[in-house]
Amino acid sequence: ELQCFLGSFCLSGFLLGQEAVESAKGKYAHMLFKELFEDYSNALRPVEDTDKVLNVTLQITLSQIKDMDERNQILSAYLWIRQSWYDAYLKWDKDKYDGLDSIRIPSNLVWRPDIVLYNKADDDFSEPVNTNVVLRYDGKITWDAPAITKSSCVVDVSYFPFDSQQCNLTFGSWTYNGNQVDIINSLDSGDLSDFVEDVEWEIHGMPAVKNVITYGCCSEPYPDVTFTLILKRKSSFYIFNLLLPCILISFLAPLGFYLPADSGEKVSLGVTVLLALTVFQLMVAEIMPPSENVPLIGKYYIATMTMITASTALTIIIMNLHHCGSEAKPVPQWARVVILDYMSKIFFVYDVGENCTSPRREKEEEQKLEGDEGYQSRHTEVGSHLPSRNDDCDIKEKPNGNFNKSCGAHADINVRETVNCCSCYKMLIKNIEYIANCIRDHKANRAKGIEWKKVAKVMDRFFMWIFFIMVFFMSVLIIGKAA
Image 1 (cartoon, one colour):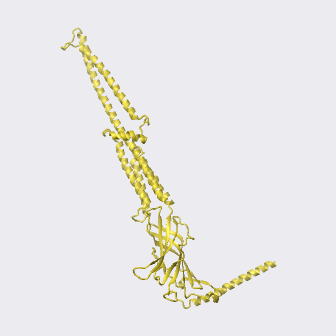
Image 2 (tube, rainbow, N blue to C red):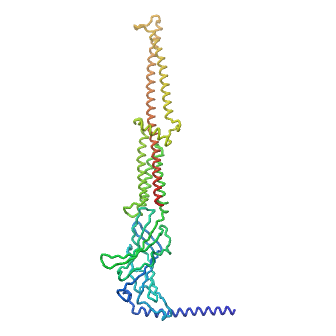
Image 3 (tube, one colour):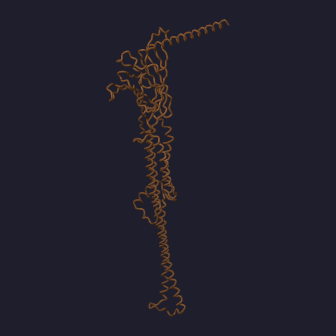
């Protein structure tokens, strides 16, 4: 119990001592403040010699990227701006004030450099935030102020959405020239240690460069510090929402050649795909600045739309070939050799019942030859049978046109019946020949239409693979740009 009592007593004594020290420091701080600012003016540059340059050290800490407006080319960022300088009239001997080495006072009580953002793109020209400054005994003043800046940034969208941007933040004095206020970089780059990760942009650096520029209006030099913010776009969002749907839609375009010509949807598919890509193109155009540099994804859309337009035009031409009827000319010999004989085998285009070893066309020619031979043999039989009847008729008839008297009346009747039968046979043969010719012409016209349909089918397969290869290489090219 005695130890506990002694411990409590010591702790109480320590706390009372701390309160006494704080009270003493507060007393000396009030005394110091009253003496420092009794004859102090914050309107004039705090140097003992007006010809002496006042050095201002500048440090920028990037906390967050609030917005990157590509269309209006404006970068919104949240910064911490630290400025430090020496005030020749705000010094004291810390030993006279019980070791008090620093005080914190409102920034509007001291002189502040008028350092502003040169490439500011905001309508609000309000004063800086009046945060406190830290004043040290040797006259050094440190002013930390937060700021939300909107700066102009030249946006190059040539490789959107795989682009990188460089935005400059240029800080300098608005009225003081380099002979009065000089700006010094605190670091070789901006401070990114407290940066909050952005969902769209990656920070690859923020180098700082000091520039001394002489403007046309004045002969004095004007120094400034330019921080270059190097940004790399995170493209995952645009890949899954703009690029990947476009690639999938592009692969639908060659499939239009695979649709049967009689389905009536070949041209409709091409027009639908073209309209879908037009919608995506408008979405990209809304977020891009109106410049001469066409973004990479826009070039891909335009190339794909051109390809789909060409495929739709070719589909219309091929459909005309498919619907060639009996009025069309026969398939040219070169097309028969190149398209029907070679390309059909390369692209595995066969009619129903055909295969790669026994094409149907050869079978049809064989059947056609067999049918013609059978018809000729049957025609020969009928013709050979008919002259026998005529011979009977000639036997019954005298050369002078009189019938044999031995036949009598019965023979006269038989001769007339034989003559009538001969006429019937002749008429029947003529009708059979007419029907055979009609069937032969019909088969020839039908074969001609089938050949044109096969030509159209082979060309469909040919262009389908050509456009598949084009879409594949365009997709690989744009993905290669991303790498």
